[in-house]
Length: 267
Image (tube, rainbow, N blue to C red):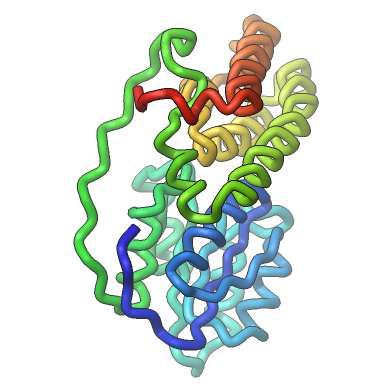
């Protein structure tokens, strides 16, 4: 990871209801010597924006109770006359419509999820006016294929995380991923059974973020492929979809538990 010129005393707000994602973002930033203030929902983010001495804010687009667009709009309205605070959105869908909505609300830019450390630091450094060494170009992601042909875990991501925080940190991240994903499956099943495509999309987005941040590539690609499934498809294929997701999650969790990623080569 690159070294940066740090602004002393700066604090970055990380607002994300997904604890796995928030922990990874915080560790990446702390590794670069930034201070981090974490919150888990929109009202807490707005309170921090108005009351904390911040140098930058990172807001998940789908914050609970109040999303990033609502939080930013209210903050900009209530902070007229203050020095401009850079705010970046963390979004899973980088459509032109979403980007326009974010900019119109007062966000300064967006970062796609799952979080890539280099992309995150580039955006943070640019927003803070920090000079950093140029980053290597990111690899083109694989397309959606039969996930059982891939390793359950991409070892590169976990090795990078271990370099960030050591063995204890990677153990905590893995435990958090398993716990968060396990809690999501009952909600996914319920929304599929009810043919509620909106709720299903929200839950599968959260699962995709969890999977991406620990390198569970097959699970991530499944979630990506089904991110726009409709109510009719849920009615006919919802059960099969959940079963495949659970099977791939079990494969990823087993690989993590056995530390297979330590021996694997990147796919």
